[in-house]
Image 1 (cartoon, rainbow, N blue to C red):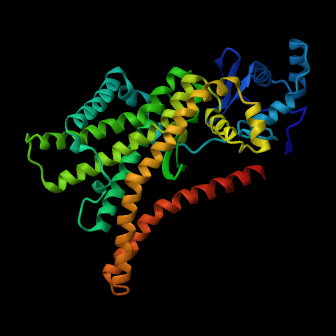
Image 2: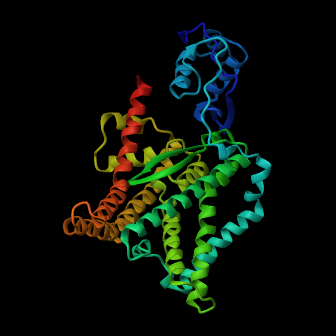
Image 3: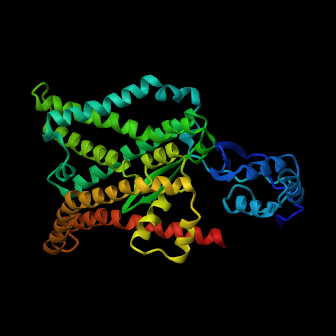
Length: 404
């Protein structure tokens, strides 16, 4: 086994090449979910490799076509670094494939009706109806107290966490279903967005599709969130108007679901955290690295750029630089919203949780049932802090392994 060289024939049989813009192409492997944007020369090199040319032969052919020297080996190394092709010259070795989420392998014909015109009309209608009910009855708007559905704080947090996890899985399943509807398998993983731990459905294979076919899978999670929000708001709205009689426990559970779904939908609009709406905006604008370019352009305003970051910004795509001029307003607005959310929701909830746990641990007999409830509550609360840190450590470890 040896490194790819000028006499190597890179294995590109499983790669897809698709024109993204007039002068850019997407090249990648749907099996691994890794894609890069390359100029027309790169797309032509992939075609030559697919035709059986060695790296040196492809470079010579491109020099004849363009009348300029082409570093084909450097291009191959870009594909290797991106994880698109194997970096070793081997014969008969099957390409690496990703471990896809089994739910994403459902046949397209079974899930395609969930994302047709009628379905999207229902998704939008449910969200609009929920907003209308909030306007008509502002008392239905969520507050942090809605997470405490029972007098027992530990039991409340246990139920709330279980419900939130289940609803989050439903959100990700809908992403996977939408991907399957267009023939793209996906992976489920734990990631971090700002201070929040999140489940994420990796639909990298969508980048092999035209932009107009990506929007549905990107928005699918928000679509089902809107339906679930409506399903929780509507009974409470009917109860508030005296149309139905509901048990108090059910009203509190519905309020907790409303809180969960409303926060989740609001969170997805925070494009600066690279949420679902960020992917929609990046696709609509045709940007390659909008998030990083925007972040670095803001740092430049305060003269905080490192030499490496200044180099990245100097060589950024003109489209990313142009869009970042207005996108950074949304970026800053998202930071302000997050600060408001922390102040009005997370901080009051944390005070109640940690205050109650501290009082129990101090006042309850050591190792008593009540004392153990305090420990359990402290563990629940600490998990939301430690999980994002764990994701950071994991990602840095993976990055170091990739470099090695």
